[in-house]
Image 1 (tube, rainbow, N blue to C red):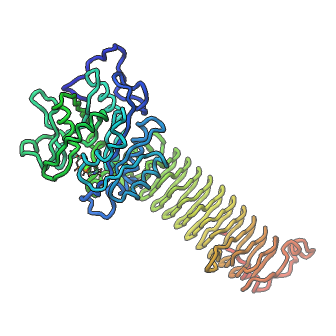
Image 2 (spheres, protein in one colour; image 1 turned 180 degrees about the vertical axis):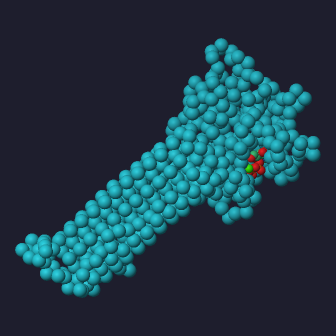
Image 3 (spheres, rainbow, N blue to C red; image 1 turned 90 degrees about the vertical axis):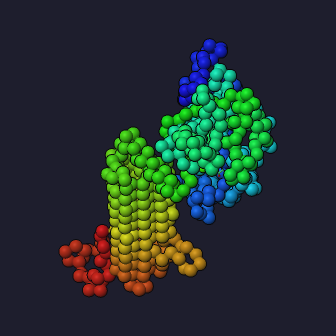
Amino acid sequence: MDKQQPPPANPQGTPTQPATPNANAGGAGTSATTSAPLDVLILAAGLGTRMHSRTAKVLHQLGGRPLIAHVCHTAAALVKEGRPVHIVVGHQAEEVKAAVEQELGAGGAIFITQTEQRGTGDAVMAARDALADANSTLLVLSGDVPLMHHETLGALVHQHRTHRGRGAACSVLTVKLEDPTGYGRIVRDTDGRFERIVEQRDATPEERQIKEINAGIYCFETRSLFGALARVQPANAQGEYYLTDVPAILRADGEDVSVFTHTDAREVSGINTRVELAEFERLLRLRTLRRLMLDSGVTIIDPAHTYVSAEAQIGHDTIIYPGVHIEGRTQIGEGCEIRSGTRISNSRIGSGVRVKDHSVIVDSDVADNCSVGPFAHLRMNAQLEEQSAVGNFVEVKKSRLGRKAKAMHLTYLGDADIGARTNIGAGTVTCNYDGVNKNPTVIAEDVKIGSDTMLVAPVTVGARSMTGAGSVVTRDVAPDTLVAGVPATVKKDLRAAAAAPTAGANAPERTEEETTKAVTSDG
Ligand code: UD1
Ligand code: CA
């Protein structure tokens, strides 16, 4: 908080707001001095030269989401519900807009195009038509500062609105850095009051010694902002219009500028290089893992080598082994075991599930007490019902495995619907693609598919039937039928065989051919 200019008791004598107001800082009544609503303006038009990338900086991913999405998420927590966030776009505007809409939904943002990137002041100026007449408090954020807590920004807005009992024209968020290189420095006067911001490239050697820096996060009274912004000149080393000149202009006009000194430098720092991006990735990851361990009761054997998205949910007593990646909005239940080398993305895993080493589960659903892997691949809405199992080198695409069904070895199941308790032998393939269309395979419950069966879709295998090893099934198989051969032909009616008086001890022996072909792998 601003040590030099402590806000006096508010004139109405009503209790001052807590330093951390509710999330809806723009809501009516959060300020003692102004009831103007809160607008947020995010600057995101720059390319980010220091990234050395063809991709605009704010589109680079942190924790699996673009930087701009993190900032939008924080901004949305601050504005009154239904009030759009303003975003200045320029470089790769269409892609940035798409990323914003993905986060805020259509209509959640108003986009302002800055055609030429002539500095942060010019970027804000681009929003003049959209904002200048708004009787609002404007919070200005950068699209490349992704880890801010909305509580911190809420406290900044609160200080801005209550400064000296009447509110400031501008409030600047600052932090002290051991190494302030590259940042704008906060120059204070002999009384310790804010004087101006000087950019690294324009600073004297003495000014470069200043460790207090401008985080690039500001609060303005919208109307006074645009009045001062019109007077900013590009008279600096970069020939740009600096937003950082505005506070000094306002101060020269006799307006109050307040300084909000934050203690957590990391939280409010921007990303300028890929080294910083990697560092932030680590921070975000450890923040998420700590929360999972402390609040959710998840065992993480080696946090240094575990990657869990901030949006994932994991139940207690689940154990995550080293080298696991859990991405997107994945949900994992209680008491699961997720072994090394596994990647789970945007999927739902029930409780008591064992995912063995090196499995990949994408956009899929695994119910309670299933077993997956090692080396299994589930994708495109694969659905494993309770207690089903897929094992070594099994790929399941857009298919359902019924309760207790199993496919344990070397199998491809695509566009298949597999009934309860059915066993799929090793090496089985659903031949689902005829070169033009994807065709379905339906295998009913209690079926035994022999090893190395090719199921040429579209095809249906009825309940309780069997296919011999190496069968190529080109036609539908009725229930209770054993088929074998290439292509598979009917060998016998299993029900009739079981009911025959000769069944049991006196049953005729199978021919050698039948015995080989009927062997299935039981997993
Ligand atoms: C800026 C501040 C600096 C501060 C630092 C904190 C200025 C002049 N300097 O420097 O005092 O310490 O942030 O991180 O403001 N942008 C546009 N259009 C433009 C230029 C920039 O939209 O024409 C956007 C960028 O996409 C970015 C943000 O504004 O999101 C900040 O721009 P950047 O170039 O990163 O400013 P810094 O040099 O970091
Ligand atoms: Ca920056």
